[in-house]
Length: 363
Ligand SMILES: CC1=C(CCC(=O)O)c2cc3nc(cc4[nH]c(cc5[nH]c(cc1n2)c(C)c5CCC(=O)O)c(CCC(=O)O)c4C)C(CCC(=O)O)=C3C
Ligand SMILES: [Fe+2]
Image 1 (cartoon, rainbow, N blue to C red):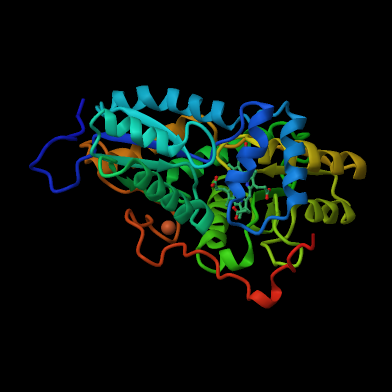
Image 2 (image 1 turned 135 degrees about the horizontal axis):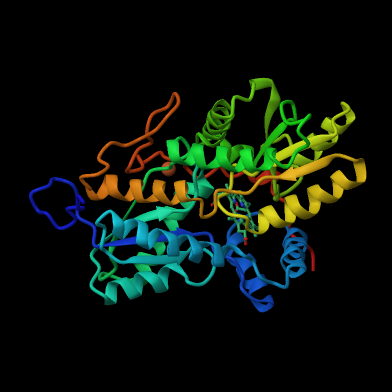
């Protein structure tokens, strides 16, 4: 078997002595919920009522988000996959918003003598929220650790990696199998992703990349263009600010109004069946569909799909210069995304003019 030449000085690629998996993080007990939400929304314009409402989503599930357990399962699958391909450097894990926090992980890495790590950020598409904000949080954590903190590079976004597209297509195929046979060839496919403010969408290729992944998945399943739609969920922020739409609930209602009886919903914008999927789809959307008489089949996210695990290994190997996978694979019209983000990549959204900011609360 060919090995990764991680420490081979004759190669002109950077050497990495650790892999760092970077997640969003989620609460693991009821007392974690509010401090977690405060971490997520620090410095942002999220109304207090929205926070309390979202806290209820978490409490509905016992104050536990499944996301941390899902990342653990992914890392458990990734370790052996990496070792099978000769990658022997340790795999660490740090989150943006909840334990294990990035700062603690980077400190542990520094203590273990790690100098340069390759980060796999668990977000498939580019946007301020899913790209630059992760890099900012890594930068802040490095500052907190101090001069001994390892340098951290990030793997490219992977929305158009053939293994990511194939794993998503597999999940939709699984869902289609649950639709009555006579409907299977015509049931609408609704792809859903996290909504972001329009001002945030304006500084990145989020929408374009999402649309491309949907198109590629649909093509793999031989689903016609007019049979699928990309919609958005989990909107927050002030109602007066424009966010990406259409909203999933409105779209489901519209499908029913047109006489639809079945729908497959695939959370293409997410990587595991975490709270945004469990609450916003399996609760909110399901309740709506039951009320209006639309049979909703929710397809699974890629999660720990073997092809997705393989893709992460490939993304790591292409940067570690593994002999097995030097080519940077991608499909579709855009080619592989950049390894190092350029200075203008996924800039923060422009702040709304002060005149439009909410009036300060009166005591
Ligand atoms: C693009 C995107 C992804 C996908 C890419 C990625 O994965 O990064 C994502 C994932 C996730 N979002 C998550 C949870 C939350 N997102 C929030 C708020 C926000 N998300 C945004 C965007 C995204 N979010 C934005 C623009 C906001 C507004 C505030 C802000 O600009 O920051 C809030 C605050 C309350 C609310 O407003 O809903 C919560 C609790 C969880 C964890 C679920 C769990 O615990 O299982 C995950 C994986
Ligand atoms: Fe970026």
